[in-house]
Length: 535
Image (cartoon, rainbow, N blue to C red; front, side, top):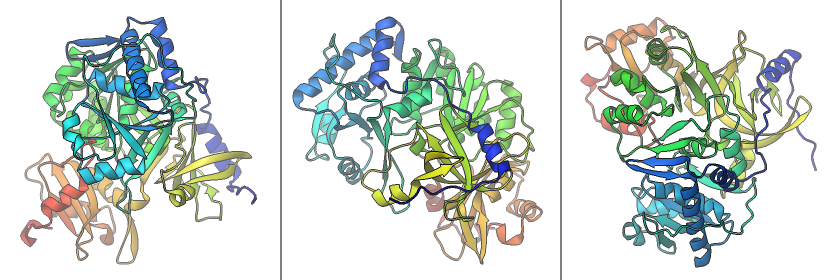
């Protein structure tokens, strides 16, 4: 057996990383999600667990419904350890289904009925999933050959007083999310019960407890739903379900106000839209978490000015580390600030900035030196489903500061800021491109575009056409703003080879189902524009 590879480090680098990685905190590390929920249900059976429209389901009732469905599934032949697809609209029955699968000792795989049949079948096959719980069995029957489809609907589930006699370990897999893969094949990311518990217990980024009212807004197929659902249900709070499949900013504001939501997560793009178009919507929300893409400093600065300190938190984390890995409270921020950090690791999470080109095992970066962000701690996934080579490449073991660490290489780049030890995100490895022999960061171009006073939002990406490699799509607040003005602005800040070949003014930037900017849709929509429309 080969010796463990040791990351080299200077005394300065070690001291800086020791400072940010003092994140150990007590939490129920060895208890499963259903056991933690059942304990809350015993202690506070009448407390509201889930609200949906006029319907409220208490902790005790939710526990009994999940017990009943779990017993039904086991009676039908489901075995502990099985993967169960869950395809339901946002409803109390969705939450019952998730909890029931966990009580069976299984793991749930959220899927969307709107996905094409080929994608659905592919993901289910990759996850070895042969069961699907759904509120639309007729829609799925002809697309899911070989799967046992179990209808789940209000009034159909018989409550059960006792939980199934199944022992569920904290290191068992609780759910699987699929993320896009560079090869075109989605990557299945399993997450353990322990990872969920580490996310929501002893949280440093938000106050979670019996008084918390979290809005479940994200698609359940998106890992933000893990925080929205279990951040409430494992801390005694209330999970309020957004009532419609489609989001409208006016309705969002009304729901936040009428349902007294005090903890909310919004993707970066959605947060920017709310600040721009419906800023009063967030006026009563005590803690607003936002992340998922490069932050807009002007939008965040405007939000701080409008809502005041102590309410905004910038978060960061890949699916592979269970939703959130770092957090940065944003209490003050100038509109012309150069950057917005992603902060420090959350509880029971560690982060290292490593230059893997410096030595065979990597070198720990000193403050203000850029490297790749590597994560460690109880939130890490076991690895990718059916992808042993990729797992071995990205989930590695190293010795750091005399300690054996299992680490996830995120592919994101950043640095520890010398003045306050906050982590600053610089962009993804995927965003590094070569143009005329020069290696450039697309995120750096977008950052400087956003510094223009007329720019509301921008995204910089690679064109599908080889002769025009870098495109910038820009939404402005000033109708008089021109492509020529933006190009002159960039030329004053960047070398000529970093100025995009094409700058396209847009009315809006399209979003994906998970609330992130849809780059593919942008490229497709503008690919056939005439030369006169380009810069």
